[in-house]
Length: 123
Figure 1 (cartoon, rainbow, N blue to C red):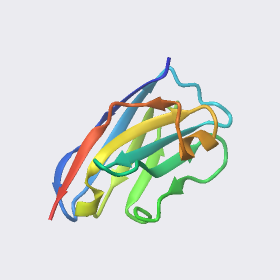
Figure 2: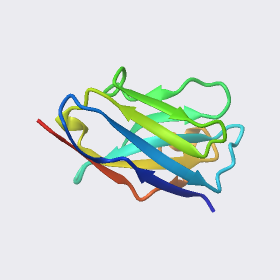
Figure 3: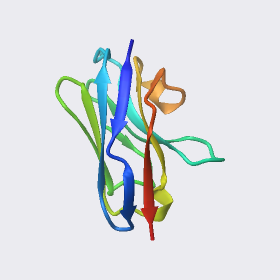
């Protein structure tokens, strides 16, 4: 059973930074799997923020976060980080760590979800 636990969210002023962390257990670094961060704002569709793929494919970033957010993970694929810089009020959302055993899974409906961590960016 894959278990994902997010941390690092909280309030921050616009222009500030946060580093989200996702502790991962039970996940095998599948040769064609993925880990990702999604966000959701109440009343809106969830959005994929960034994805890292096992193997060689480069990470994916949503246009809205390119140049501001950076994914990283440890070698054992047990912790996933999202460094969030130059935060904007529109980044305010619940952020979820997700995992899937296939690369395509992280683009739409990932198999595994954490409980989320709230990010609040004030202007």
